[in-house]
Length: 84
Image 1 (cartoon, rainbow, N blue to C red):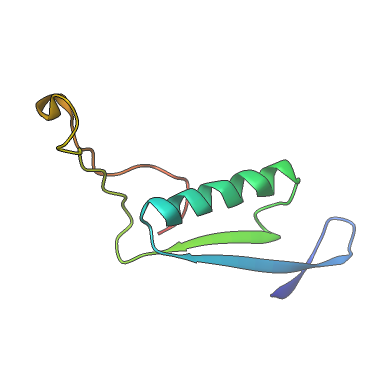
Image 2: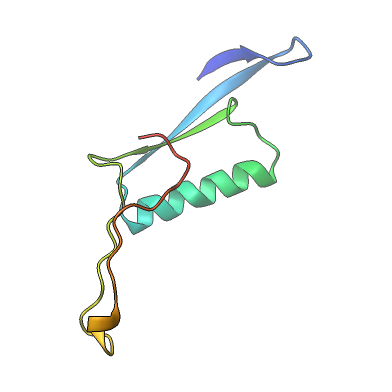
C-alpha cells in the first residue's frame, strides 16, 4: 500500500490485489473484483487488480465429451482490459 493524493488534497491509500493464475478461477476472480470495484465507486488508482500468470492469455478448449464436438471451436485470447 502507498499513499496517493486525491483531488481534494486528502491522502488515500493505494492498494493492489494480486491474483495468481489466469485459469478460469483466476480470471473469474479478477473480473469479479473489477466489477465490485466499479460498483463501490473505487477508482483503479485506489485499488489496482493484477492478474499474475506466465502467459497473458486464457485458453479455452472444446470439451470432447459434448455433443458434436467437431462443431466447437477453440479460441485463444480473451480480452480483459487487464495488464499482462
